[in-house]
Length: 359
Image: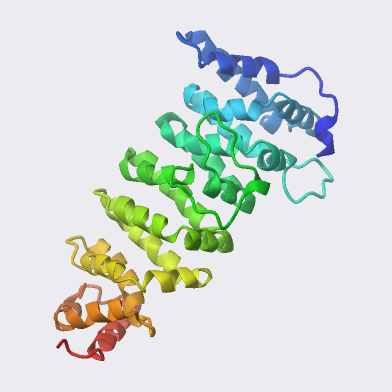
């Protein structure tokens, strides 16, 4: 990160930041939108070049250096939803390139700008997450977030930050993996956003939510174990209980993927130990929508196939043994060409047949 301390030439950063701050002032002049879009477009040319000319690495370094020194990335992240359409597009491009850019001959694994954001200005990450609060900023914030969520430290910040707007975000060295979450942090805001947001907001938020929960398996496994009750109550009530068909189906499918991932073995055993979870899955089998039934089956089978069933699970399965044996042979019987599903269904029926008949 030594290049950040080279004296930069006069550049676009300070006047652009000043314009961004004016976006927050009321009443806002249309000229402010035009100026902001113009400056951001000029920055994009410096960072990415044009069809005719390539970008100059020295100029890119100077521009990024000035962005760091002026705390520009934070101001830009929190202002995305106020920008006009072209300004939002250019902002997405700027973030994507800046947070990937490594100086020529650099041996660092990550972009110095991303290292700076992670270690010294995690508020940038939090503000990108808060971009889901405004439909205008969903797409640019979502694209950038999914790119930087490839880094484990970014995922940990998103999972663990509990700051409120205007407060300092959690630092990476402050994260306590054993600490219980209060359910009010930035990660937990994804639940209502997915459930009640407009379709394009919900779909993008779910893509980011899925990346958070599946990219860094060891981090997430520990996080879910520590926050097991809070997470799955919120997951069941808000996502699987959603009135949106798409949200419901996607959430059941993701639940199955989480439970069947080897990294989440402890999560799976804890989950399938609980009778209330089994009842929820059995209700999904009776949903009138076939794809909800199908995804629900892939969670239900984990309970039945578990060789170490809890007393609560055995009791529920035994009480419903005869009804299940009548119901399952005709369950989704139109999936005649799905050999894997039919083999799994036959196996589940056989396991239920081996249960003792109800008293």
